[in-house]
Image (cartoon, rainbow, N blue to C red; front, top):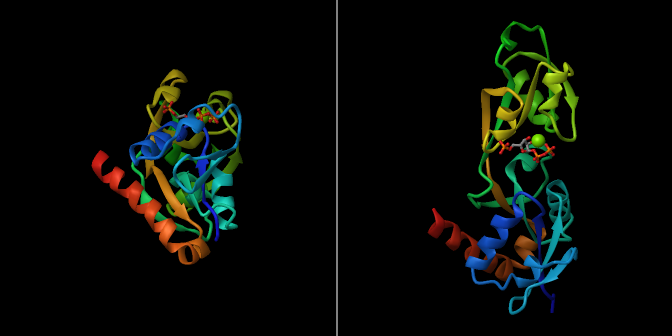
Length: 212
Ligand code: PRP
Ligand code: MG
């Protein structure tokens, strides 16, 4: 007996939609709706354990096989690629990775563009593919402040509703790519726990199709 399979979920932004999807798929999600700060949760009636993590740690847990599956944003998979299988686009968590800045800015005229971002790799690859030299200034959050304070010329960040940009007088200058939540699977689990892993993938994929 190998015991329950383990699913790592991203806390925060993706959490509500993920829980809703799992609930629609027929799983009892009561424990997770009232976790009382617990990070390991059992799902009554289904051989599944859920752990709650920050997005980039979800991918790490799945890479190392501590979690068999994970739900994580595509932004994280692109910024820190891991050797895991990406098996489904779950559709929710939809947003855009974009270059944003002040309306008056003409970034094309700059020899060396200073970019503030939580996504240094995505930012660098995007600009270097266009032949634009960049200095990346890595940020942990509140990235929108950087151009306002003169730390950078532009930012590369996630835009969902656009409210944060608007509230800070910034606009989207260029869209880089579309982002959404993905279901990932550990490569070994995909083989050794094929039946259980596929059962969960099927369950979720069915719901995603219904919701489309
Ligand atoms: C994210 C992102 C943007 C904002 C986009 O920040 O970095 O700032 O949300 O959402 P919107 O278009 O709906 O306004 P988050 O709230 O995660 O905070 P942080 O960047 O400070 O970590
Ligand atoms: Mg932000």
